[in-house]
Length: 533
Image (cartoon, rainbow, N blue to C red; front, side):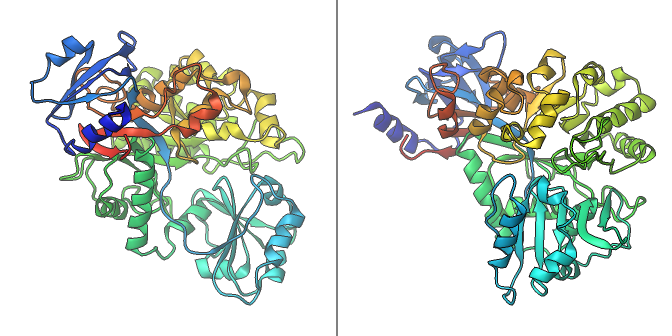
């Protein structure tokens, strides 16, 4: 019998949960500096009890342990995706537009191709060229589609351009202020159809919800897809109230670990941030944790909303913070008062400086280091700001797909010219690094992006550095590095057996995205098994 078929028979016979498991004849990357490689691993009651050579490891379990011959396969700690947004969008007719940028003519042609008298929403993603073009405004959209709701979203997720029908359907009143957001105005001072930052997200969060059944199916598809890549933990910032999301997650029967991060969208500055009654570890859900509070401090350099110390090339714009300095300090103090972790979207250098100034006002760097405040993206951490970030113990969660922007895109030119979007430079400066998708969830595609970043090629990570950031680095970013992210005795048994050796230097970078998990294990439970393995 051939080895793959033999392994398949063995694994098909495995119970979903084995009290004891012995893995032998593998190439186990532990993530542990003291013993980075091993050939065998033993698991008992959901925990790793031994890692090393086969003889020594076998002695740690009984003779009845389920034995798995890995056949030389690469085993890695479960991937921990540190930055995920979930929550399905409403049904619509999607415009087929070039990514990341469409020309004005391409957008107009796509809009004219849709029946003006048809039914349902029209939606599409646009780039910075359209977003910053003042000739695209609500009146122009109304002329093309006077009755069908039309919503064009910046592909970054940081802004909407609406026709009047969409504005009415979403209940948007530009005269009503929203904390952290604002509405665009034309030369005449009238609403131009642009909805910025929290004015955008509050609209999404408070729109009529999709049916539970559809959301459950969406969660099931996402969780199952990521398990097949070897992702065992998801840190989710959901576009819906936390209590509803936890209920949907449980209804979906998702087997991944979930860290649900609160993403408040208040209608007023005095509205309570925590409006749910969820405990950090909801009852009877050992794989679910609810912790962390996410605030978005600025926009992105792609849409020229993130404020910069020097104006944007071409337009001369400077962007703006979503909150002033006083409010930023208040947000941080509120999080500290609840003994929670702060996760802050920080894309521009002005936002990075504003946050660190607020941190310095509130507490000493030593006190902040224990808090592991997170910069999501951290693009604006220019070289002159890295040492200060390191002194505060700021953790940066980077998103490898953001480094895949075409070389000729204005964003790519901007980050190169100003030393933005650090990656390997974070490690050099002593800044803790985690990885999250915030886009394509395939971790092996993101591994390719991180090791060959188009926008900052000199910031490339090694494969081992990227894998460490995606496992132990992401665990550190959620205070679970004492029990997961490495394959060492005492840690939870979260791991993946891979279809190819991602650490083999002979494996071409272009082949990395094709990696899949043959066996994904969480807490010693088999969460996914390739039926052909």
